[in-house]
Length: 367
Image 1 (tube, helix red, strand yellow):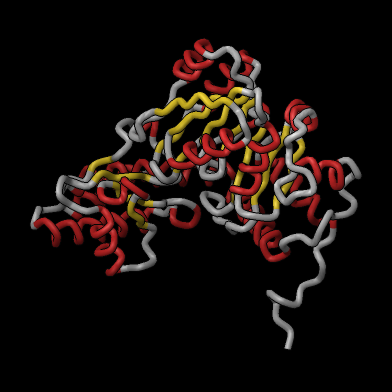
Image 2: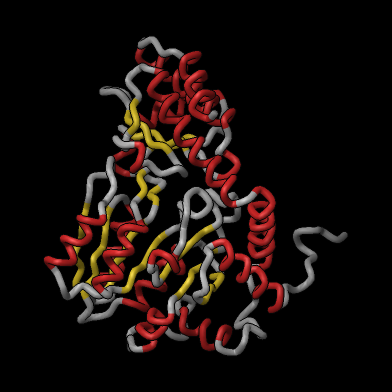
């Protein structure tokens, strides 16, 4: 018996390359685009291990847990790392980046996460890109959570390495990712004797065996189901329109913030300023004495499909995440999420909440 998900014709090099061109269009980039055969941590680590080496100095911006991970990788490569950590309730500024570069003129690599879904903040990459470009450092950007939810323009912003994944705002699969690579990034990789080669982390291997040979023969068998899902995801984005998709995520973020404030009960936006809040996910601080993990568990008991999660690590006791990305960037989903949180909060604290006011605030903010 045939099965539509199992008995598939081989994915040709031509179709693989066509999907890469559609990703390049999504990013509005003329740089080389590679679709990498794994979750986005694969190209993120590949970029860092290719671009960092002993003798290099990296500025690593930490606005959430992924920035911390990137710092570990950079140190593991032998680079000197200058960490610029900002409180998770805010965003880094271009002035803060400029000051760090002025204090450390030897910096030649800058690593930044665009939007941190885990902490709910987003960083002003366009302004930061101008500062990094003026300094001359290589600019590495994690845009996994931001792509599809807000503009991601590597060429216009001077981003040398821009990594995206489909599993957040794009509404696609988690097992495939992509990276755009500038000419000077390729040159830096080639000049780095410690850059991964003959390795699944090697972007240079893909360049030599795929890009430089005209994308005519795939280096190995692609992750077929994930590639087809990515193709379908891109088709859906093209049909909706990228601007419409981004507007939907912006509405979800605004509605969640407004609804949480109107709900009452002590829940409040974790990221203080709306301009610093990521459109892909809204984080909320629980009132004193209310464990966020327990609150989320109670809310999910009423509807396990809601896009709710507690914060990770030390934030698990105080942070709730409303992950309104992809299909969950929907007014009804936001309203249902806040209603469930309100019901759970009232049961835990006996504090009055106003679910009707929250629903009205969601509707008004969405409009």
